[in-house]
Amino acid sequence: MDRIKRERLEAKGWKIGTVSEFLELTAEENAFIEIKLALSRRLKERRQKVMTQAELAEKIHSSQPNIANAENGDASVSIEFLIRAMLATGATPQEIGRVIAEAG
Image (cartoon, rainbow, N blue to C red; front, side, top):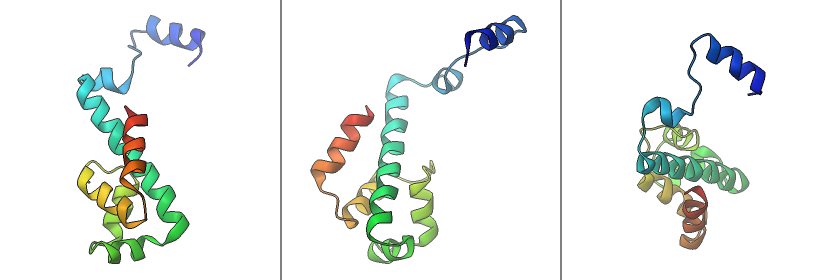
């Protein structure tokens, strides 16, 4: 956001900040969310190169909508599910570790 727009909004009483500030997230909560989103993005990138959502779902005994939710960062998806799905696409534990390290 440019400086002039920010000043105009603040002059009208708007508070400008981050999502984390708005939701009053702790640093740990924010890091957890960033890790889940990074895993979701990488899962989608990897999966698109090797298989369809339906194929991945069958491979991990899940459903295509669950895979879609995982790739879209749905809050209901667990990190365990994201890691299982990543491993099923051929990701190594080292790659998963790098995704997590880069997110934090």
